Image 1 (cartoon, rainbow, N blue to C red):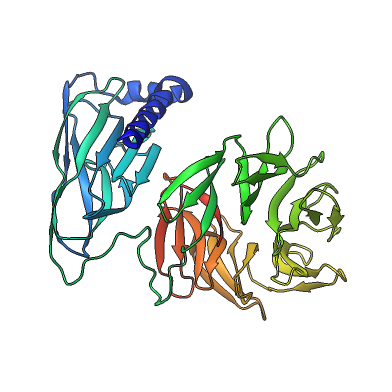
Image 2 (image 1 turned 90 degrees about the vertical axis):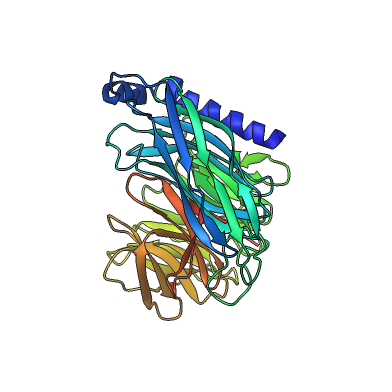
Length: 442
């Protein structure tokens, strides 16, 4: 299994790099918090449930490091994708405040790679190292097997692995493996044919829903605000000791080119419906205005040219107007401008600042979020500005008229997670364990 071995080595390299090069502070914290006594063996026990076809379950991995406080782990697990589907994973309370160093799932090969490290700032709350969310697909017995495991403090301990035997009894109907759990509405899969770009740790990634895998596109640091049209991705990147510029990435060739090369910042590029133009925000006039430029970089035009802060454009589907956020009336609201006449229309009149507009495929709704200390997603009716307020999170794009991509933190110690959300029912499905600012194209 070459893909398994490659994923395993990748996880181990990242874990070691976190300890020995990039996070020396964690070593100091580990030394300060680790007990003096040594333990030369750890045990890891994964739950062994009996399920029926169609059942979902959370399998907890219980760790015992004896007198040693284990502060990091890296594990590669194997499972039978014909019998079992892995829907997600979480860290338990054993590491206290912690972060994933690496995580990856290959649903076709039946491989999952996890690596995490304690940040040393809080004590364990339980013995759970991590947990897996699984769904039983077909009758049979399958062993979640161990390919590789390293766990310990500064030095990995000898570890014994127990459990992981899953017994699946026949249910009413066998469930075929799917990339994403079914949506609550009786309609087609909103991910069908989609390509999704997103950011993780300020790098740019592409997610393939059909294969349920992601891959890095650009690793330049300070990369954000992606939008996608067919095989092209426009994104913001601050590099070469310059302010933020817009770049274009070709998914077919893996090449990129700089779209803007101005002395000021350019943010939030958005493709026109036909892909020939890109709208964006720039502070070239010492305040933020909305601009449009042709795909080849020609024809730059300042549309708003106002004294207000105008930001985050999104196109109407006829390509004749732009919706954006502006504080021209005092508070940040949604506005739109007609490209031909320059006429403005205020869409919302909220009692809070509302930002980040993205238009639904039908053009009937605008998703965004409230600009407050803990942002929460909102949906606005385009025709009259009526607002539906939601829960904690930031909406970034639509998959269809009933499904929004949005990200939020599961808790304040965890990185952002991308979800699919039905904003009209509140039902959600986790899509990406770590990521934010996801954008899609069918």
